[in-house]
Image 1 (tube, rainbow, N blue to C red):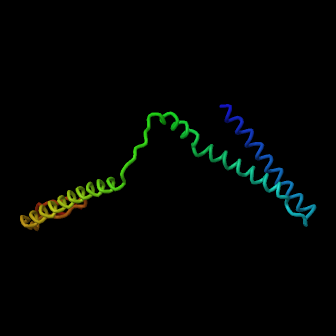
Image 2 (spheres, helix red, strand yellow; image 1 turned 90 degrees about the horizontal axis):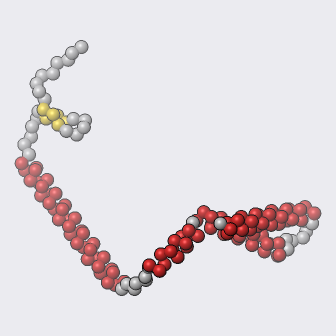
Image 3 (cartoon, one colour; image 1 turned 60 degrees about the vertical axis):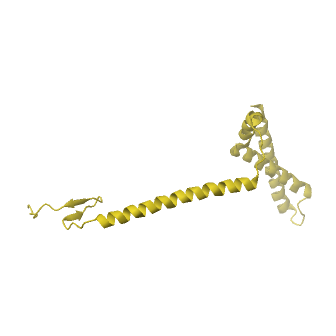
Length: 145
């Protein structure tokens, strides 16, 4: 955790340096409006800004945790060369099989729908219901008031 404390001190130091540089620039504009900002001051600003961005990125990106986890598993991982052409051919074959199975399933659905249509007999007594089912009308309706 000592690393975090030194990062905080460096971050505070960079913030103070940046604030001082901005104050110097603002006062310099008021007192000596015809003078330009010295290159050394601009370099300090850039350095402080870069340090701030680096510290914020390290804090919120989780890159240090990722590096730590990588080092833990690095010895267990091996890099293996893969032939790209073989990989594409294998993927194409798998996709062809998948699309063939899907087209066969759609064909079976069409056949089942056509068969159901041929066997269907119209029943005028069936009424559609709001939940999607049907119900036979049971006779004359009476209103009870």
